[in-house]
Length: 111
Image (cartoon, rainbow, N blue to C red):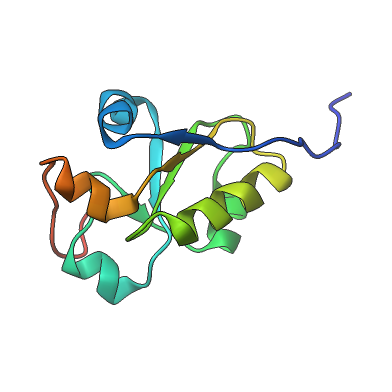
């Protein structure tokens, strides 16, 4: 029988370089609003609300969370851990740090 006990702990913070090197192994979730996402996001990231994550993503799937500065994503990542997600990562500094490190940003609604 599977345990329903919620996991405790903290999400793992990743620098942009660490994030980029693991990106293809992670489901990248952008927690910003649609307009912010449309203006620029990490290629391959998906904009999702918390209730959609709970309904559609298995709790053992590695998830990386991002936002503009890393503040909202840190809150969302901690919440995911409190909901029992086992492999949660947060991009330190968010999209601003990603861009500052020279990585590509995609515009529009497509991941």
